[in-house]
Amino acid sequence: MEDDLPEAISLFAWMAWTQPTALFFVGIGTIILIMTVYEIKRPCAQRKGFLPIATTRGDRLFISLLTSAFLHLIVLGATDWSIWIALAISTFLLLITLRWG
Image 1 (tube, helix red, strand yellow):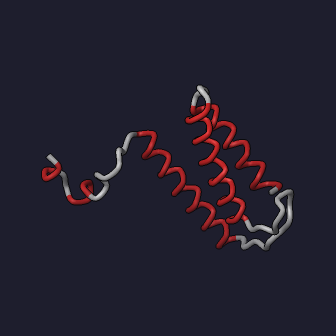
Image 2 (image 1 turned 180 degrees about the horizontal axis):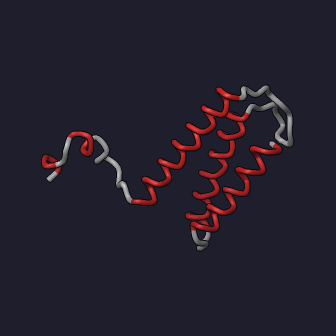
């Protein structure tokens, strides 16, 4: 069955590409692209916010993505909450961290 797939599709056959999974990776790629363009147009300097270290925009984005990943894992593994609740909390934390982190 896999032999019938075009070459480009078979490269991605190792992962279960559901629509939410694909949207997740497209979203992360889009965020990174937007941050790259923004950094080229308006370079930033390190600053100190509520995080215990001086960070750049990219640092704060990375910290936010890690926080979101761990939050989603905790919600999936330790609660019976909807994943949408984790997404809402993650989005809120991302905005707070990028603005004041």
